[in-house]
Length: 154
Image (cartoon, rainbow, N blue to C red; front, side, top):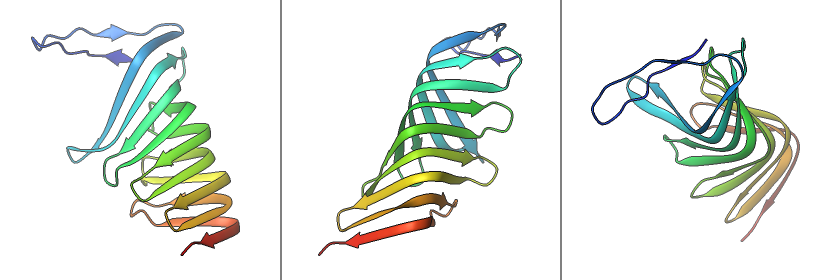
């Protein structure tokens, strides 16, 4: 069971209980820690499956506030109980300094880490790195795990 409390300008609220297979169009999830927004997820469609804590998402944009990285994905899933997020490719992430293309990406809310086991390409103004598998910790330290090919430009 899932309850939503939408708010209007008058600050009145009603509880909505989702039963059966239901969906929302235009879903926004704010993940906060210590009253600060850690990331914002927008999905054009969110399918809620009865008796599951997973919401299937489509046409996704996820913004990480700390570093301004924006992830784009066609489909993914959000776990309502542990707040983890998974997206399936192609995934594109953009920052002011680089772009990442990946097959998939998993976000672990408890650690704040991102990872993928699939193909990865990171491209900046003066470099390009391809490989397989990537881990990004909460301090934004990036590791490409194997089959790494790096090209640097002058």
